[in-house]
Length: 338
Image (cartoon, rainbow, N blue to C red):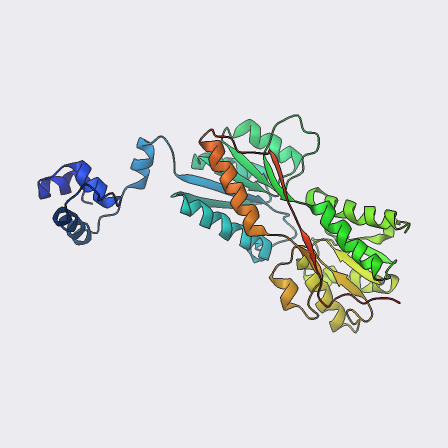
């Protein structure tokens, strides 16, 4: 491959002039020379050596995006609209800053740590991490990092997180059902950790405030280890007659539940009301359209990227814990009980 030095020799100019044209800094270069350099670039299919440029600047030019998943839940995590939107938004914001995004998805924190450490990334954005995962990351990867949607309680280590008002959103949508006359309300999730735990807390708070007693049977645990979605939802179908409404921890499950119930003769919302959380693409595609809690995943991604770049540049990045607002979106999946 032709080098900047060789092009400069061929054109009888300096390497600085050629480099300035390559990187779009043509203010002090004559139009004639700009054209000569561009013709040479095209003739030799010159591609800038970004690694060499970043090495000279003492940076890799890479931002790592690592996501920890539940092994039994996903064959392909990127089929989840939330994961897809967040990944696309992070990549777009990072690219706008002249950096590249490297993605790693695994249910094994050791695999994640080994991979992100080998990239020598300038910073990391991390999602799906539990407290023990964050401790290992902090110990083994000495890079700026921003967590997304993480809850580490009263941890002894400092961390930066960008999340949303999970508990408040779940409280509001549960209270919405109560105001619509529902009292037999179940909460459905595939775990009770992190985000889903705080959404469960919001559900419990609304029920308690309304004087509705909570029973353990009101938490319908969706087992992600089931061989397929119909097997996963068969227990939901069996329990449907015990309740008038389901609060689902995500639109992903809410949409699948609505389809399964209606395929098996239970009408939504006539026989059972269903609400979700996220307001992703599923909420508008399913019929009836889903009443849910809206969060802005793209805004969340942008704030995470901005905080990380401030950290990389050793600048003030604002609050350690950013909680973005959510709001209820009323559609057609809830029946009012008179």
